[in-house]
Image (cartoon, rainbow, N blue to C red; front, side, top):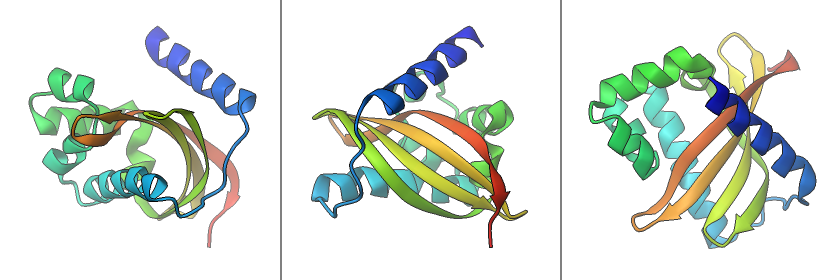
Length: 142
């Protein structure tokens, strides 16, 4: 739990400290956004093997059983991602050429709003999700 708190605190500091870039249609941007969208869809479809395939190598080593990965993520407070009806991309911050923070907004089936910050790292097989910080937002989606 302390590790998760440190991760969340680091994300928060990085998001505040660096200027954000808006979506720009850059092919690299589209690459990591495609990975995020694909993993979100896999969670929505309850396709545990696909969801795990978009996670970073550390997750893939820790979870040899995709179902364990899926339930660990859902039971760790990330259910709103799997239950979301839509998502959209906000600004991103390129930390290094191989590491990015991407803002993603979600609308749940219950019309609740959520915002997530995804950390992706470029691995030999392409961009992979290394962490997500999810926060409920005030308001209602339509």
